[in-house]
Length: 124
Image 1 (cartoon, helix red, strand yellow):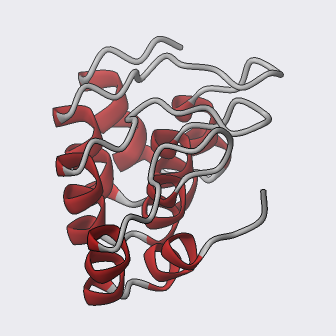
Image 2: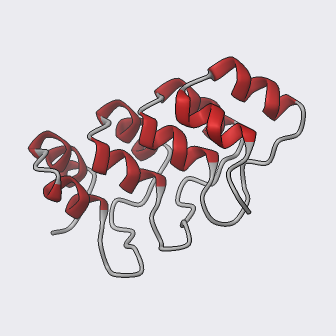
Image 3: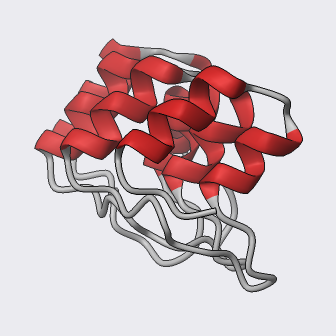
């Protein structure tokens, strides 16, 4: 499945569009990449909150095992990380190659995000 309209809306931060599409029945729980991955990558906290309220799977693995938390960690999206962790995102989930959100943050050189993840129980 390719990118859907709700995924693109989530990526570019169009909250009203995401709401409208969801109200019209757009799926947020498809296998693979989800709108929550895209919103987390884009740093769109309000959209992340909305998608979580709508039942988006917090720890949804993309085809390579990447979770929304990993996307947020890679991009240094502290607000989104806090939202995901509050919704019980797994800070120790790993990709198919064993990479965790903490490792994504480390690779980006973002010590603030690393500290946030460690405080939530992320293991080195």
